[in-house]
Length: 196
Image 1 (spheres, rainbow, N blue to C red):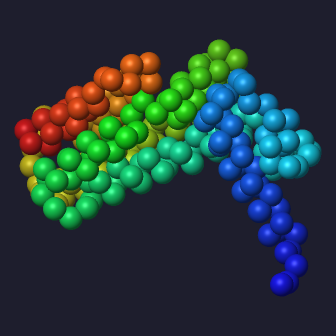
Image 2 (cartoon, rainbow, N blue to C red; image 1 turned 90 degrees about the horizontal axis):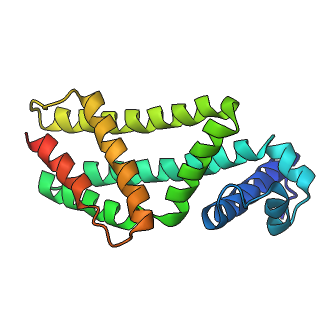
């Protein structure tokens, strides 16, 4: 078996650190997860963490971006799958039921956003940009739906995307506290607006 190049070894170390950090951040939260804990759990030195991620904030941002991209992909899959609009909305409902209020992801996003506002103003703009990117991804999906099945919407696609994202975030936080809360209002809002 050929030896790994330096670049391959560095990429593998970075991947292991990111995987370990994701597990710890989602399980324990932002504040309880230190770079030392990530290094120890991954079997590396703290220096290995710093050589790949300049700060804990950068590491956490990567974890959040990774999870957020996976969720956007899952929503995209639900909305672009074959079938009727009702079948695609049912797939979206299934995603919402399985995902909204996930204690790890929901609480990490909320804790990190509060940290950015209160303690890390230099991170705040990047957190805000992440929210804008999520809204833009939803707007793109709405646009794709309108191309496939043209109709008038009661709101511009950008505003609809913001409304869906904001309801999803609020509902996710509430479901993290009260798991018995139904995620159905999110799907119902999308149904109402897409069928208007």
